[in-house]
Length: 199
Image (tube, rainbow, N blue to C red; front, side, top):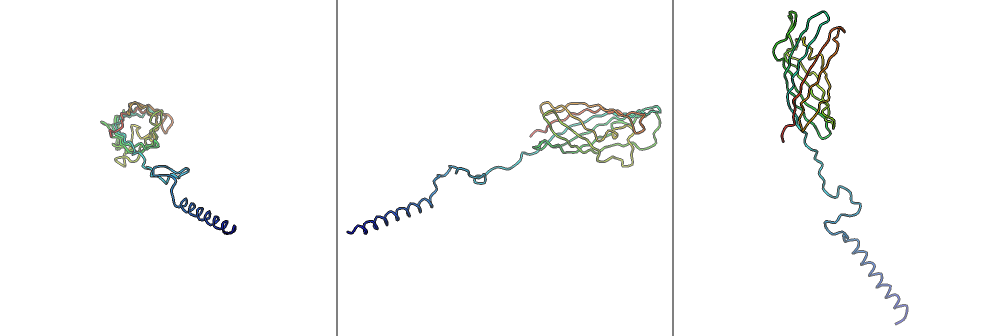
């Protein structure tokens, strides 16, 4: 057999082998099932994107307030209420509450106008490592034509940082300031008994 015929035959064999190898490599997976490919994107495997459910807190508030008038005399009120709010995964606080007049308005002089009997409240704030930063705002009053002579509403909105212990808040705040006339004084004392709801 002539030499050039042998060279052509061996060249054909090598080309055939190379073609078969390339075909097998292109149609096979070098990574068996259960082995991740290097650089694989997160979409290659299922992931959970569900956020934790908000945590519910609830409890009671108690408050006593007074307005000391510069012309003499004082009006005093006591309040009882409740708060209910959620704390989401980012620590944001959102909820509602109310405060009702406990007993009667007490003034050192006659009052002919209606006293507010109930405040609707909006609760907001943030749960921090240092405690519960809470803000209470007025949402409504009842009756709508009432006046708050005892100064509870005079402190709304009110902000505070409450201490937390073992998923519970038992704390008290005190606030004081001058009234709108600049010569009388308002005074507020409020206690909180709040806890994280089970489950």
